[in-house]
Image (cartoon, rainbow over all chains, first blue to last red; front, side):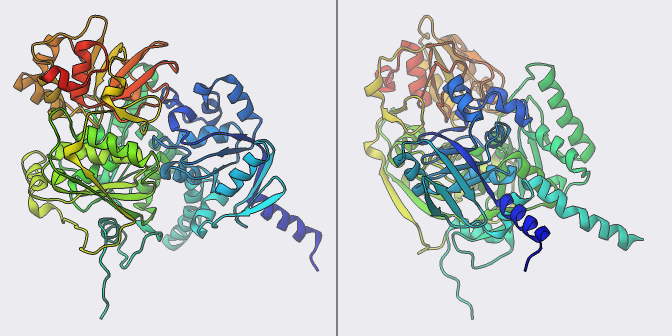
Length: 191
Length: 425
């Protein structure tokens, strides 16, 4: 029998892997210059970058982005530049995950390394489209599932190393957490 | 006892960088890159390092910084970013620091002998695939990953599948390496090589200079390639010895094994090629130049890591010699590096370009990175760069067409998109 405390901890652990809510949908080969134009790369602040996310597509798209938690897209999302801000500007806008038919490799890396969940699941993208393109979507990256339009789709789970990075909120926090105990150990050894 | 199955270049390069053996596509391993390139993103890496509270680097000699995307500084903010990098390089003993006068990172690193066959190189720029022109494994990453490599010396890397691209035969007059790549990008699509290692071969590729091989490997990124590669040969060795000052004892060439496993082999008949144009706003939106000839232009840009090396400027000058650019058209030429600028100055290429009406800017990324050469609403540029994304050069309501340096030069003369054959005959 589990105690209430254990239940809460289990819920929190599951919640950590489960993100979702309202969606905003894009087509194929959405490139990094459209996601965050080069002129704004003088900033690394997610909130400031979010002001300019999808600016070439106009204010209506930008407003809808801010009301969304999941970006849904067709093939080759994030093609183009290696600019990491293409992921961080989405985080700044409140996006928790991108679910696409496929990603450009460098966008995929940048998403994981900045703590943005990026999931390749063409079936889920198609299901949302079939349901009229609007509605909520939920992603559990530990279980490897996407829930949309009353159905559950599976995707190949991440290797543990990538899950660890996401759990820590990105590569840099992951390294900082990783290095903290070893620094203490070294200090201990020196004493 | 153990037999090793035939391996691709990518398998060998990642095995060398990771110390692992018998790697197969799809495996994820930790690799230790030989070089970590960071361009204008360097200041972001430094700020991230500060946030981590780390003040020692895994190996300062593997760090290379080039101030290329905004050069010279545009305002107090970018000047302060540059100063941060300059002072950091001094403080950390980073020898391979190249300031705003050097040029585009990729070209500068190759010219200065930092890139060698067999190496594993990461850079804060997607076009780091270009290092394959010297037989190295080059791939683009974000600034957090470069920062992590500064500290730990490693990054996670997935072993890619490989695709062979065989280009056979000589090209007809008026067609160039850029046209070959536009043709391939149009045929295979912007995600045709996603996560793949692109190995270029065939009689055409083997006969080309390192500069033209850079154009192949640079533009492979526009098909989504993780890295690109041309097998090192006598041409590579001569470039390394004569241009980059690297002797044959300074590197280990990695060649794919006979019988290695490829996802796909693509063969292109070079003899049937015609000049190509990528029309707005995607690079794989490729047509024959004749399909869009006559399209009015406001600007022509000869620059970028794809096509602003010495031979690119020489080709443009050859077309422009004895001509003037059309009234109302701006021709902006941005040499890829200070070395390219110096050579073009010595040989008279710069003078020819200026006489024709070109404006020469300092070496660097220039208009391709959105610095200078911006367009107003409704304007169009024909560019030799590698991207025509919406809003990359000024207004979101402007258009970028991509073509070869010869097509760019011919179009500058007429003021409309022009098949170079029409001017060259």
